[in-house]
Image (cartoon, rainbow, N blue to C red; front, side):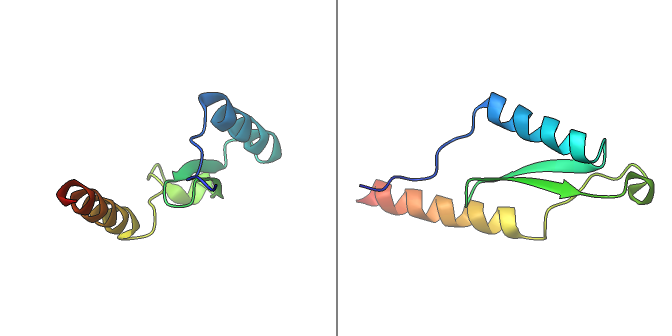
Amino acid sequence: MASGPLAFKETDVARAMRAANKAAPGAFAVRIERATGDILILPFDPASAQGAAVKPSAGTDDEDLDRELAEWEAKQRG
């Protein structure tokens, strides 16, 4: 029987960050995709970012949260 995506442990994320840092020191951002259960290592140029945070694509988090809320409400109603 299939189950949902497994949650990552802190050590899994730490390993991914160490590997990314070895490949490109300091030039990455880490994001965990809740919908797919993937750890994403996003490369970027720190000089061009000028201290700005790496932002996810617009609207994906809100859409995911809205969908999850609708599913939860549907389960609560029975």
